[in-house]
Image 1 (cartoon, rainbow, N blue to C red):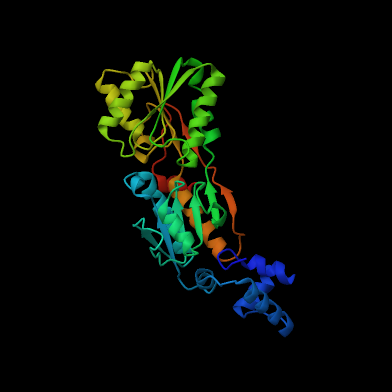
Image 2: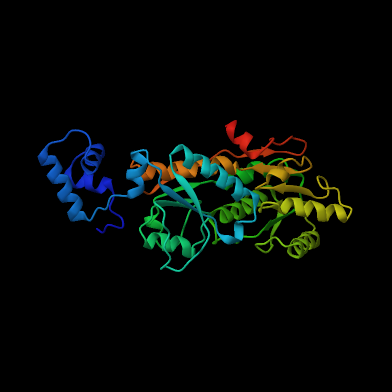
Length: 339
């Protein structure tokens, strides 16, 4: 066993003591015998345990530095800005600072943080690889399937499968053909695979012919226009948009073509931006990015403090679905505070 993956739980198991007792010895707090102290320190040395500086500083009430990495291709989306604000709120409560990590970097890059959040990581995410090489505790917002997945300190995830089913439930009975528009292919990010699989499963169960259409990551106007053309050629009377701001762009294009969104075709956004949530003409799914960011940092802090075992997965289930005509929330932050 190496210092890369040795935790306080490993030391506790080695000496047959509780985690709290081992923690007290390593921090030199509380009451314990000299024999206990010697046994714990010897086990820690033998196993190669290295105390985490962030965990120590957070326990003592001194601010540490947490990192937030959002892949460059996603930084233009409002969802991730709201996620970052929620993450900052949780870091403040923990007495820590939050830094936005901007560079991807090769494996030699240094990230000078005590722990990090990586949002929606792809299997080949270089920044995450570099963090793991540096033994930085990493919590991912969204499942990670790349190299070193077994070394992730924690995962907080959203299960889009039931969300997609609920969003489509009232529309599929009257649909003939449905098109899924998305920018991320299954196999890149976990959520994209779940949305894709759920869409086709629900359409098959309802006897609705289905297709998928991809737009570029930047959601450029030309790419979106081509996707709407493809949906028209397919004869889609139901268009499901699985990228933030995509439904709004589709609606504008369709209306310019004289189409009545809501009836011809019906439009669904599975990840609506704040602006899209205010549009009552189509179905919108609110995923509460502010609260998601808050909960993700809270998980990282719990791991650093030793209150949650490494490798823990938590599920974030706060999605709300607004059907056509339903007013949306006033703002992402006010909605998060109402939870």
